Amino acid sequence: MRFKRVLLKLSGEVLSGSNGFGFDFDAVRRIGEEIVEVAQSGIQIAMVVGGGNMLRGRELEKLGVERAQADYMGMLATVMNALCLQDVLEKFGVPTRVQTAIEMRQMAEPYIRRRALRHLEKGRIVIFAAGTGSPYFSTDTAAALRAAEMEADCLLKATKVDGIYNADPKKHPDAVLLHRLTYMEALRRQFEVMDAAAFSLCMENAIPIVVLNILQKGNLKNFLVKGTDTGTIVS
Ligand code: UDP
Image (cartoon, rainbow, N blue to C red; front, side):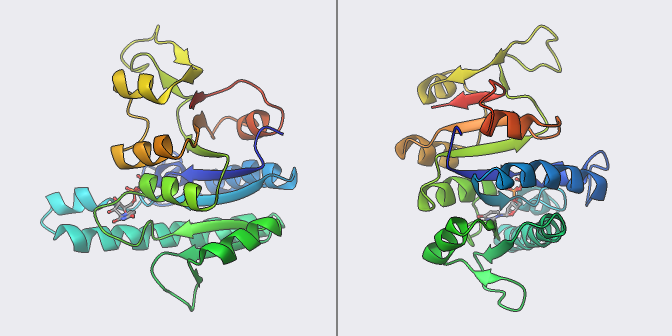
């Protein structure tokens, strides 16, 4: 096994499948299956889920909503995604807990670091929702923060793309997938792996960042369990 404990960052957009908005439940189930396979192999999984399939604070601000208010709405979107994932994962038979950075005790536990660690040790998937609980942050930053707090062996950013390329593959069909990068290379070459706050948290705490395509069947398990070289590792 490559890593014992992983912080999996799932952006909201992967939950919307080809719809581009909201939920595509077939897509959510497919992703859930990939995650469950890894969990059943004994790897501890903590997750941070985004909300971009519903709304992003910055976009709402452009429509005239006050930024902090818009960000709280964004954080609520991440809670809906967390509850949706919890439902899907538990239907596959894996125990889970949702912990929110803003208290919503009727629906989920509040975030308590030591309790989250205990859940992981017991084999439960912990889904962290509501980001950091503060506006002006992103769920990438929340993922880096929780990865440090959970002492995760890596922050795995599950996306719709295969990893980091030397050029935009949509514009340059001959773009090459980069399998390994150092933090400094990623910074110097301005690859937008994650936002700056998230990136620097990982770099300062020496948490490797893995970017891989979660929509490709078996990819997550192949990388984490079988050690196949797929995606990009920044370390
Ligand atoms: N958000 C926030 N604080 C946080 C995390 C998220 O205010 O700590 C808000 C912010 O408005 C953001 C939205 O929640 O746009 C959804 O998160 P994000 O855009 O990171 O989701 P993703 O793009 O990963 O789906």
